[in-house]
Image (tube, rainbow, N blue to C red; front, side, top):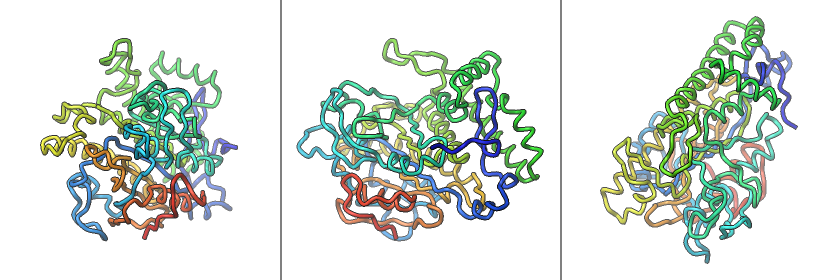
Length: 448
């Protein structure tokens, strides 16, 4: 059963439901101490495709993090909330007798630890992903058990990678062995889902009015907000104003993207870019990061996934002087010029991760900690080096404080072929969702 939405947890209006962050003035006296003591723990999984130029990723030595390598340099301000995990492997992304198809297997196995059935038909088979294990355990505490965001849609049928169904290469989150959770790539649709009401008829009416009269979702809940403000102390009034301003800023950026983009065509004929998607890759990713943070801030969900692109993505990054496609460059054949361009793409993605972490750090929790302090964020790829298509020594970061329990500010090298799923077993326990095994796990990873 989902958490009951009341006037103490959300602002209501026609087709609109704006969940609120924690406000001390509204906390029942009997529960205030407990609420203040332990903010909820959250988990997020951020995926990047096509491997990494590992020479500019891996710290020079184990132990305490010193000078960060070039690709990780944008995370300097977050070293105290970062653990670089080397040596982890994804065996089920390997061929294991199935031949080529590393990109499909890498994305499919990253959160499942299972070998996808090689098929381009409807008989796909994989397994539940780590985010959905958490959602099944924790989902009754929030309005949404999990949210699935993304940047590239991708197909769900047909063959995309050497005989593998497109569903494997396009989906990070899997509800079950044959049921992927489609990700939302349109910021406007994601925003409407989180801030829309529960009545579909009211939701459609409110959306139509917003479009017609150029109104904000906040316009529909302003009466509720003004009534609520009278009950708040000065500090909470300021906190509410800052939060509503942040919501409005995201909404304005979505509308700007819509006006700038319209229904313009992409290279394939008869294919429209959804109206709310920015042309800028950076702005697109950052909007999705903002929406994720708002969902966590209001405790609308505690579990989220966000791949920055589908594995095998051949997106061009011409805006930073990398006109070639990402996948094309990843097959660099040790060409140093191509490797330099791969590193630029890797660093661009890390820049976006730094933006997400800064947003999380800016959100204050009930006990004075930050959202980042209570986060378990896994960032990485199911491929090590794109040219080799190897699935060992993966580029994996663990970020956040985990409620004060995560060991951070360090680099750990694990024994060769240590399953990535062992990390998830550890996170499950920390999130209150322990299980004896998951995917191809062999035991809980030691995080010390």
